[in-house]
Length: 200
Image 1 (cartoon, rainbow, N blue to C red):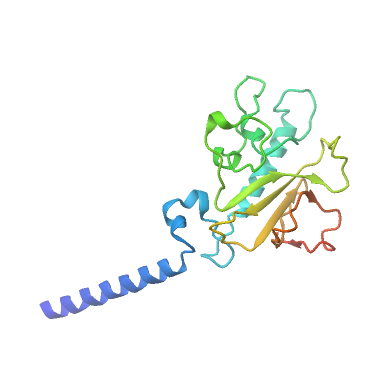
Image 2: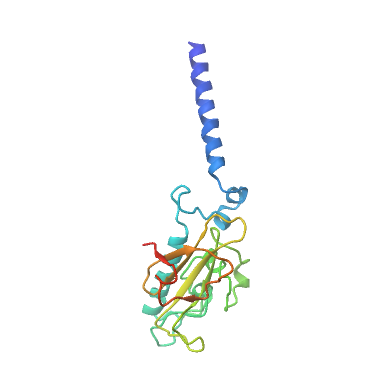
């Protein structure tokens, strides 16, 4: 009987080691294990993850809230156009930061126009930097307060995803293969022509 238990125990231990080995093999890099919230992007095909999607969708939801409830108290139902960080930092009508997004998302702003240094150290979120961009047909000197757009760009290292993602006020995510030599600074007017594919 003891031999039988020992055999079963040995089998389970071997199975556990094999399972652990497979998990570690599929893990993109050691930074994903040590600092998962910052670097672990879980791209398509890796545990079925799509971490870029809720992040961009959260920004779209925050913008809808910002406009509908006039969060900056300027008397106009408009979107926040300056950056990503402002959706956390900008003072509301009560004078406190509006915090419509998570701090980690605000700190992932690659080009903050509002001062977020007092809240933490900037860094990528789940493998991405996020940037507020304008629409291609917008005048950069006079952005339309009824529109917005964001781009999520994978970090240089560790690089888990080959795609770059965008979203605008229509709340639809698009992606295409990331070309670092061709930075995305505007939301294109013709998505198909520019190689963007609808994600959802």
